[in-house]
Length: 204
Image 1 (cartoon, rainbow, N blue to C red):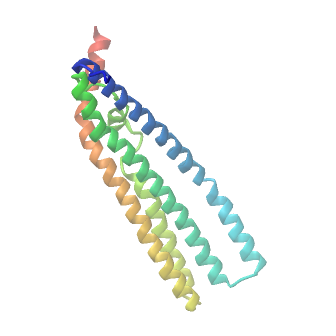
Image 2 (cartoon, rainbow, N blue to C red):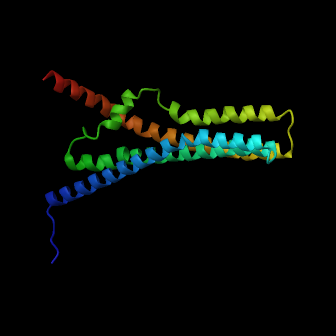
């Protein structure tokens, strides 16, 4: 015979489910961060390999140049995609999961780390999201300028391919910036109230 839970038991069970989902999302975010950090050492290794291929003169210089740039942009796209996925998890917690838990516990001053970061990030928001695309634009423009003197059909193909990759990189970074703007607006007011609560606790 099925047991019918009373309202209090349902609230407790539902809250446990929300907490379990929160823990699963934060664990997933930790894995995303590890993956993102592991991409950075891949850049100098990849460049070193490209230099080796260039020095060995085993293929056309144009292919080496544009191939190396394409590889770097693919790393950048993966980096931006991981960033967007991580932000999406945080956005879900702040925008969807948080109100559900708030409804059960009857207050909203909990899970304060993201609101805290909203006010206390060490650098201006969105610079991190823009850094890789800006660097990509600079490197792409510089490569086009350098190759303009002795360009060939390979250069045209390489420029078009890398231009398409650059568009993908910019779009992924813009997506990440859009997500962080969304939850930062939600968290600003709560962050101020959390700080006020902290001051009151320190004064008491």
